[in-house]
Image (cartoon, rainbow, N blue to C red; front, side, top):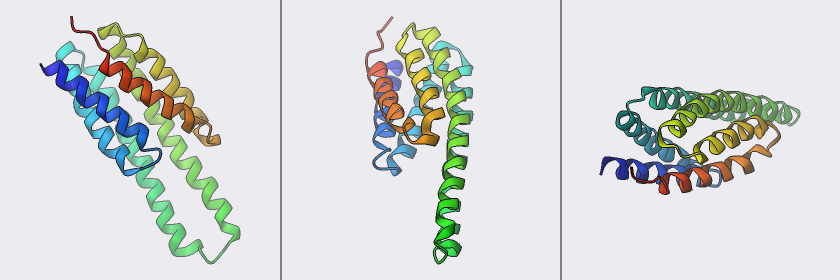
Length: 164
């Protein structure tokens, strides 16, 4: 029963993260659901690396998002009157959020590789690879398409985990 609940939370969380590309506030809700589910999987499979690496990845995602929010706020306060600084702002904020998302993605990859080991679901490895490639490519915006596909794949994988 606990595993079913974790599968449901993780699947719904993954779908919310995917939809977060269009509605950013859903990403945070999805990440929280996913973290709780991964904690449950870590306890079920007695592999704390699953949760610990995901928690570090989650922290980097939060730092990246908060940094982007702060940079956006500063942009609105100071740079709105100076059109030539808009390009600089987009380059700086894009680099900042991409860097922290990439760092978070590396830790999520480790977490999902561990989950693939214990569940014997190879789609977790495929997801983690797509997530890493998408994380690298977010700097050129193509990565967001890969991230969307990766999070959908993750949801499908969670919903299709077989009972032992």
